[in-house]
Length: 264
Image (cartoon, rainbow, N blue to C red; front, side, top):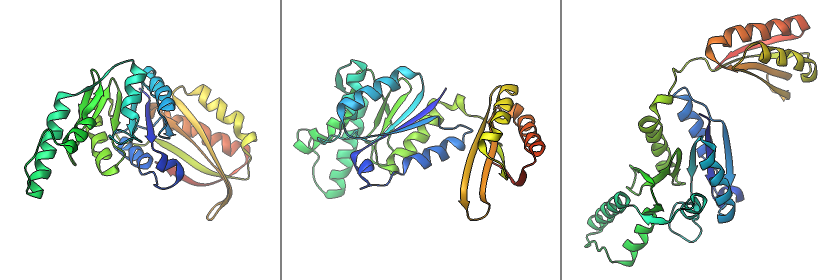
């Protein structure tokens, strides 16, 4: 199963806020032997969100969507998800109960009496209105839940809420995907060679070792290695060592200089 990440918010695209989701999600996945397949940044545009979320629902991928599930006019994710699915929006009963618990907690902290018919309470209840048939994702920070439909999971944009909710999804809903954490890639620093010259070697290694991807990361001004290429393999752990040995041997035969060898 591929794993994708959608990060929503005009504030990210404008630079008012710095994205803190991408690096953290990669970290959370890596701790479980998993990796991110793709990521997208989207603005608060409902029509664009409908198109992108329809693609996510139809992909069969495990997808996390961060942001836009609040109840202010610039939040469109819940409505876009419902439109993409062709479903109505409904107040989820478990979400309503969880939000009411939050309202009671806030009232107790302020020394006031909670009221179900108060305008503020009704506005908060809007955050529990999800596409029909959705399941909720518990929010340990403030009890305002996220939701999921199939393998697409919607969490708030706030990292302090989103990241533990994503962890919960990975551990409670998709523990079967977890892999032993070990070597995920091996690479070497190559100097004195060009990517174009090494491309046939890379293609040969991928052809000889199904399940292995060869990557090439060139640099022209690295402070330690100067002009170089980081050349490596990643993928199937069962064949990684053999694929790396073939790649290294090919570089040696080419006559390039091998510097540091890296294991991640």
